[in-house]
Length: 283
Image 1: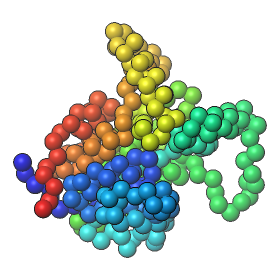
Image 2: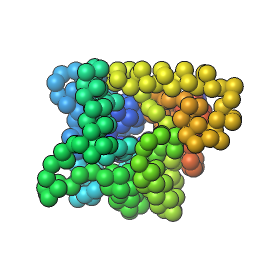
Image 3: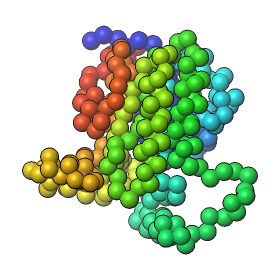
Image 4: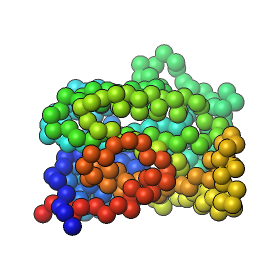
């Protein structure tokens, strides 16, 4: 099997849910890997529980909306992987990231409170602006893409977008994702790879696993009528399989490794891409 070319990845959101898995798989390929996030090295690793592969990642703190905080990291970068995103402007991460059902229930209560207008959002005049779909899903992507376009070594920009399958989600969640995609495909300086997963899960987030299991069960039950369901509003929420974060991370690595590959990959295409054998790691 052919050996993979030397790569230097900048994984934006590398300390997050999916970003950690991307970093792990990139290191396994022997690629130089830099993680950019607001917190730098994940808190869990600071506390001592640190897998061996994490020692090979360059953990950097910075703001993806402020190029001055990461421009010094861009030298010789060949590929950028953008994993930053938000599906709600509320505390949804307290639900999916919960370590137990009590924490998850508390997060759900807070989200429900905001939906019906009963949650105190604090001082609207505070200096730090509240993150919005436009800021996180679109503007971070555009800002990074503009910086990436200046790098002569740049090859691929991988953007983790989303499938439009989630009911009761603000339409701006998808519209800002699509605006970011449109901007990327207009850039001639690099090839753009857009992955559109649905629900993502990992056993490290116990609160997400039951929901993934429920979706898998719904997939099985609706399989005989999936074609018809997909024509109905949000029917795809019952027929689209959830993806483990390792499946998506594998697809990211395969997409980068395949010279000239670009385009949009939905859930089925992500699964297929994740199964493509990776080139042998560089010696």
